[in-house]
Length: 173
Image 1 (cartoon, rainbow, N blue to C red):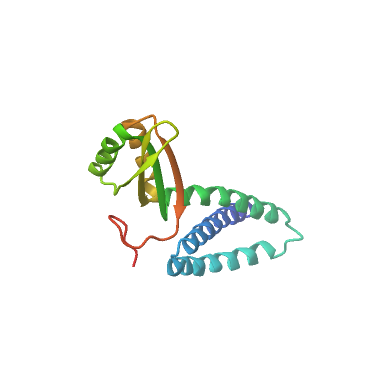
Image 2: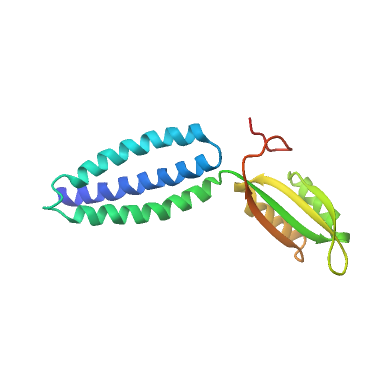
């Protein structure tokens, strides 16, 4: 019974540690160095305690290594889902709409709280409007659903961007 409890703890702590590692890496790449460093502190404590537990008498209980590896694999999966839910960072959404519907779409997006920039463009056969938004990543799905609901015949691209300074609704100090 005690051995089963140790296996469960190894698994759960490893999942937590890798989830923290994933979050830390994303924070650091998004410019949130202090938050990443704080998470890294706790991640290092968990890792040290966990590895010492796994390596203690590992030759007589090699299943600890398998449980550790399973926790690592599951932790990567859980970490990416967790990070997606947190939605750190900023994205740039570009929507290319036909000229007659583009201004209406921009107006509706603004009325729903999105900052919108409209640029004139030219497609192969007609005038187009390029609607550009820089929004918090966690609002991406909401924005895309709204665009598709308001106007289904548009072209949408989404790109992650580095930290944004200034702008309507986006403040980075």
